[in-house]
Amino acid sequence: MSSMMANATTGVAALSLAIWLYLLFGRGFFWCERPQRVPAEPPRQPEIVAVIPARDEAATIGETVASLLRQNYRGRLTIVLVDDHSSDGTGAVARAAACALDGSDRLTVVAARPLPAGWTGKMWAVAEGLRHVEASSTAELVLLTDADIAHHPGNLAELVARIETDGLDLASLMVKLNCVTFAERALIPAFVFFFAMLYPFAWVNDPRRRIAGAAGGCMLIRRSALDRIGGVASVRGALIDDCALAAQIKAGGKIWLGLAGETRSLRRYEGLGDIWRMIARTAYTQLGYSPLLLAGTVLGLAVTYLAPPILALGAGGAAAYLGAAAWLTMTIAFMPILRVYRQKLLIAPLLPAIASFYLAATIDSARRHWQGRGGEWKGRVQQRGQA
Image (cartoon, helix red, strand yellow):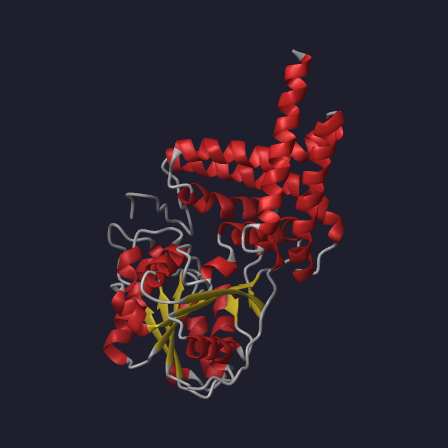
């Protein structure tokens, strides 16, 4: 019996190491991703309209609007803010920010109509903005951006340069997330790491591969591509709407996804519970609401992240050596994103503990869905089959 147990633990350790060697060398080198800059002067400066869905975003919308009005872009840029039944004066704050920069004529605030069945709140707000655009703008490009993003002055020029130079239908940036509080320093770099693992940027950007992804905080899209897919109605019920939209667009065009160096999120996560709720909102959606995939994910994450340190510290012989090698490999893979976020590399060996947090939040995501509270965001519960 002891021999069988030793063989089993050695087999698990070997599997863990094999997984990490594949992730290190066989998944688009996702862990090496760095912010990339392009020449800020695009060959053309087509007109852009920015559509911002906003629900109770008074704390951040002023800075977002101001950052767009300060863009070093020679083409015409206008902003459509969709006030999605806010109760905190979001629209008034946005107007005040535009007025302070003499940009009132470039900002339109649209009140969203009531949310219809079958739509998520964000996609309905975006659709309301695009409905206004259809009636009033000839802009060639649409910037879909969140109400809590501070765009660095050259952001739009760089995105347009990339779209025009590479013939893209969609260019998206994973913006720099806040990494100040204890919760953010402990968990946010791993969030970016896991996202890049699921959607390796090099594979997303390769037109020969089917995998598609985007970051909804900053997406510049050709209007013709939106028309081609039937607008955002094609993803109206998607909680992970950015990646769903990217998949629709990539089916008939080229897309690009990268890490931002300076464009940043204004959203703060003060405590562990804030990040827990952020994960739990969509994690089970990522698994297709499948109990079988959830069980497989729990098992897979246990073998990938938890087994290596447990075996390295608690097993003997070959299992301990293999477990230690797997732990070392994941530590090496985690270091580059910690450098991007200027965090201490001493955090890298703690990735198994961080992964445990994400695993527990994923299980809680399934629990919330089963209790009818999936996709909860700003007072709305939106999950599959629900408005």
